[in-house]
Figure (spheres, helix red, strand yellow):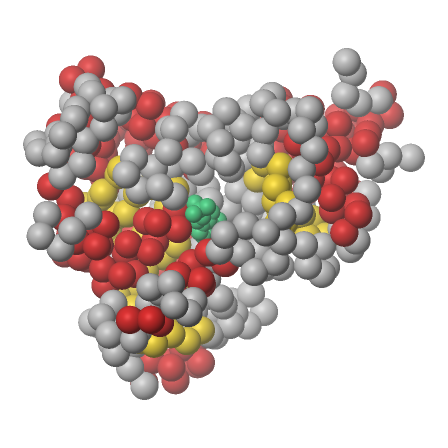
Length: 412
Ligand SMILES: *Cc1c(COP(=O)(O)O)cnc(C)c1O
């Protein structure tokens, strides 16, 4: 079965040539990150014994503990919890927030509203959210896509315990924040009040740049292992890393205040987490090159995309504005129909736990819902933006683009 026609192939081949310089730069970042990851594996003497299955409490589980040390080193952090017991990115981030905030404390999000599922965990009613525990919350919107430092200072003057920043775009029409910008924020916050904790939602950001937020002053960050740092191989899980005492607070919430990160076993063994992390720099650049190709192609066909072609990628997502529910739906379905798993399934918009609008998702993935694998998702709301991310091989990303454009009959 041929998934595309010739005129679409020729069009995409031309687009591909036009972005060669940009994809080369992305490859160079992957090279530096691969070096960084390999150095950490060597430093910690990773060996077969670290992959072993463990069970029960998991005291002195060297597979778990060494994995944490490797993550911490690569991300320039003092400590990390990397665990299959963290069920998702939202869980990792929620554990960190609950670990750090006490009744009466105030949380300030400075990149607009946090990701939908996290917002619910912060402000939801009657579900054991931070708000239910008397933690106050406010947000400062970005101004023209940048931090609004004046407004942040004003908010901080009335008392803030944790400043929260979302690196990736979430379901917003904005670009992701660069690590340098996050570094400026950290410096600004600490200059205003050195005791304020800066926490970063790092989902979709890992290995996109040569530095991570914890290397430019963030006290703690968290993310999902079925996104970038799992390399398409980790079967589940999340991570939390940062300053030792801050991560420890999060660990008390993740398990129990009395046991923290001393426990946790995994009867299936840890090899996939190590191998996934090792492969992550390469896999992330597959996704970035896929994103670049989609962006350049849709831009040329007259669609508004974010980031603009030629702009540096700050996360692995490409936003494409479709303007109508029907075309957005067709796009998401075309991504599903290009998938190696469940490629014959038709996605429909549906109510999802933690999301305000109906969401349509294409995730024909080996690891269920893994968005480091080629996937697309969108809340059904104006202006009907499609968010495409992932692609564990660039070749697959390219074939999916060919199929999408052919199905949308976009190349005339
Ligand atoms: C994916 C994501 C999360 C966490 O989502 P999970 O589905 O719970 O892993 C949080 N923030 C952002 C920006 C994300 O992209």
